[in-house]
Length: 261
Image (cartoon, rainbow, N blue to C red):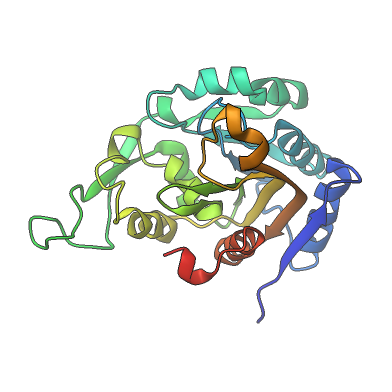
């Protein structure tokens, strides 16, 4: 069966674009599952300008799902040296959740369990292997993994390039799941392999990329150059296959599969 990816124009309004994406997605199968519980993973890496998912997109996604009777949770584990609770307060994510009634899950404040990075052997056994073979996942992520038949997990990344990964879209957005100390050890040529390792443990039911704007050179564009490094694309990109959605997102930047290892 052919994988479908949908693109909606936001110039006529974000709410209209969100509804268009969901209207197309629902033709390919139901959105909500038996529990009607939904977990949304935003990109809340940091509160720096242009670095995070648009709160307006999050708000309209929550409103659409809430109108369908969903019980909505918004989750994130911001990047190193950040506290997600503070990032949510600064970016407006907390205000959106308070206004819409969505619950917030601060993944960096949860108990964890240990999992294995399976993609490569240890650096002790192979020269370009992993320096760190295990990582910790928060209890909420483990709960989602155990209840895929009843819980809907939606990935809501921002359209960005990345200095190490090439792009940071749906698959890279899940790098927020391992705990902070477990992310830095192989943040090099092994990063792509570790992103796949996490993706093998948990895959989103839906991925919707916020492409209202996109960073075209790195994920932290210097403010002095933002007029050159941040471009308005005015789109949302949505689908059930995160890899396919990411491929379309990369193509928006003019990148090919060979450009993103």
